[in-house]
Image 1 (tube, helix red, strand yellow):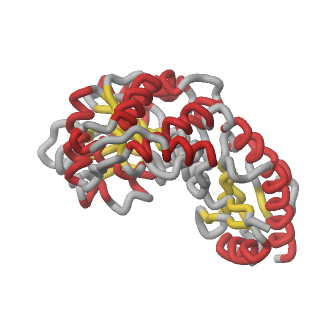
Image 2: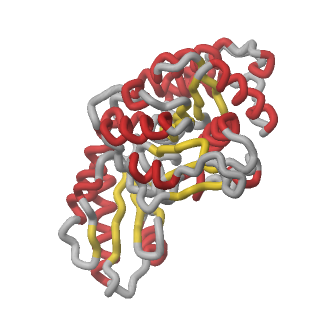
Amino acid sequence: MPAVDLRSDTVTKPTAAMRQAMATADVGDDVYGEDPTVRALEERVADLLGYEAALFVPTGTMANQVALRAHTRPGDEVICGREAHCWRHESGALAAISGVQTSVQADFTFSAAEVRAAYKGADPYVSPTTVVEVENTHNMGGGICWTREALDEVTAAAHALGMITHLDGARLWNAAIAQNTTEKALCKGFDSVSVCLSKGLGAPVGSVVAGSRDVIKRCHRFRKMHGGGMRQAGILAAAGLHALDHHRARLVHDHANAKALAEALANVKGLRVDLARVHTNIVMIDLDASSAITAEKVCAQAKPLGVLLGTAGARRVRAVTHLDVDRDGVLAAAKVIAQIVQSG
């Protein structure tokens, strides 16, 4: 029996239809700007998000890093939320590649007042704060969505202070479905945005960064500098186009499955799930402090029982639903998790 893999929505396999789209893709040399399928994907994403231009890159890390590098100079500072992906999960690239430091806020989301309090202006003794980075949905925050009001207030405060705004929208598609709005509406107020095709949308590779033509021109140079120039990349871009056409609307099923998993665990002794924070496809399962079992042990014991899970701290288990896991799978996983936790 196949494992119920809830480690991440990055573990999905291309569907048969996606593989067919990849096999028949019209391709060319994208480094020369001659791949028609890559161009089609970039134009499609730019239009969906409401920007002048977009750039296809291999990974979400590269998308964030080329955008933030395009917006900053060495010695600048970026404001971001607690455990932001660009700070926690991108191998220190902001410091190592762009020479930029971060001002990490106390929570996953933050307010305009916190932006103003963190801002440092033209003072030769400090690192000038030049960018505000927002993550929507927030990966380590459990897939929570920012409200439209909070986004408006934060981006307005940043621009009033002369700063640039970047949106890490790796799972922006999930946020749009969860809030019954459009990706374009959620991008309002941001100077650039990155979106991922290989998470909830189920493509095997790729992200896209969008912004003004000038910003994307700078990102294109940095993509080349970072080794992200690909040749007949239309094979990969075709998967992204297929995902946009066929996998966005179905994200509602992943959200429903995440809610079902959370509800199945809500009354299990020895753990806690905050149902109010299950906005999309990520469920954070907190183990009681009094319990001897750790998140790592839960994952280790679940694996031979056919359930693969992730950790988000010593006492927090992370489960992510996606197109390769159905309702029966998540309910089976809930039983395994409950059994492990209750047996101690």
